[in-house]
Image (cartoon, rainbow, N blue to C red):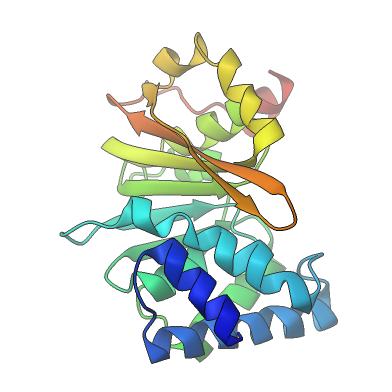
Length: 233
């Protein structure tokens, strides 16, 4: 990362970066670039990784800061976005990365070890199945998902993982954020309430939104449904 990128990142975080944070973020960029060359990990070229992955993830950090240790699960994490940048910038936060692709989970395990991320756990699995596992059901303070599925599907996949009082952060481009207007009937069933959105711009003129949903009560035991049923709704 160059000086200008570090300055922009510090502005988003509302604080200066520590040297070890810069070093780990740079190493993560290198790991993604290497992963792309070997296994087509993401479609983002190296010169765009900072903005499209690191900076984009950083907009979540001010929303996650808390005095006491908390836990976060990143659903459909792919190359570890936004979970790994968050784990670097908030080392007291316990971060669980979930993906259904074993190839991507293998990359996450190797990368977490290489970067020395002791607050990161990697899981090969599906959110709708983990939500019915007592080790994960309603266990997490926060859940993040970036660009994953249509919003109603995303929320059903994620709400079973979040504790009562916890928060789901759905990262969407602003045009897709309009999906939120059609959720009035769905949110009570999922024990969720929509809170204020966070809007931001990634150059050149790419408008993004973090949609925030608070978990109000325990989820009905039959939810979430199987993916086959969710995908048909």
